[in-house]
Image 1 (cartoon, one colour):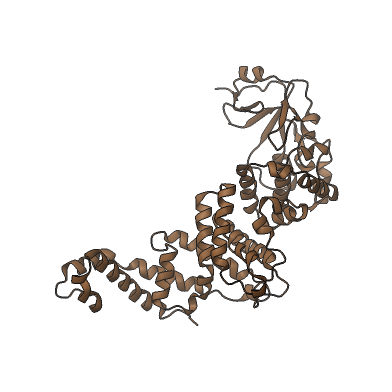
Image 2 (cartoon, one colour):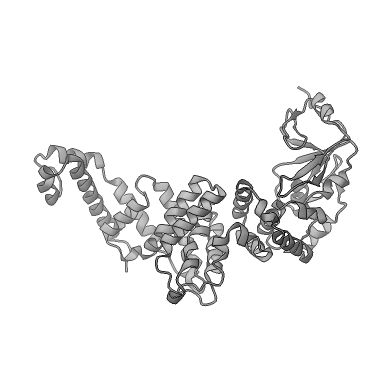
Length: 436
């Protein structure tokens, strides 16, 4: 099959142009077609996929081609638009509806850059600036600007753009955002190199208090007494998130880091800077956030474990074998060993995020617990069970358990024997590990 000819004039637009000018890798190319109709695209072999506006897939490459269009605000939120696409819409009109000037450039098939709104200049100056007043019509653009701040942390936000975002928040536009879109943009921002910048921008414009009030409430709350005195709970949360980003942690870990201390905002004022019981409060708040934003279960479940157990992980150097085994069981570390590694990643990031000289201190809890986990997993539970059932000569069952087999069900006896075998294995593994 020969490659179809695109009707009208085709231009690469948006992120591909921006990233090429920045010298960053270009993974996907989006195209805008000027001077063509939907029927002409279909007749040329392009497959229509757009529901709200005319978008087509190239039959060979799968690249997206959208007809040049304009938009008119018709209602609240990001869905309240009427789209107009016809051969008379110019490239400049299509670019004018975009969010930031650095995303409002195009490149023709000869490689020439079309830049009617000064995007190249703003790239050179490191500036995030909105294209025009139409920016205020779509609240998703607040999230996108915050995400681009995380992607390009060396860029500064134009003062007029920040004020426009504040006005949008005050007008209630952010309240019309649907949870799926909030999560989509937030998840992408979390995976950038500087995710804290996303939340700084959202705080500056007031959107964080509307989207994630549980997180916004942490700023101004004093951190624990042994932390750096200039770091409050909000800044600590950002340092923890950045530590996870520096370690190239996956999304679930970064989300858990963002959620892990939410309960500190509800600590009684008379107890500060102590935060007794904040773990249980964090579990409840993180669950409420996950339900509201429809966070994927993988992220929500890891956050729940980290919220509940990060304090115990930090204090685990004080634990003997029995307490370590109980911690492993609460974290489901024996059934889901790989997830437990993610729990420890988040806890290590929490350690690094305390400021002062904390990042230079080692975190021996992690290798100690991994050694305990490996020892417990090495226990052959099936062999222990057979020994309990056989109760024959040479069966290596704890004497106290053996004496109670007749009084308990086999299942209970097996569970206790396996636990004792694991505890003994952990005790041997911890003999060479650091402790308090």
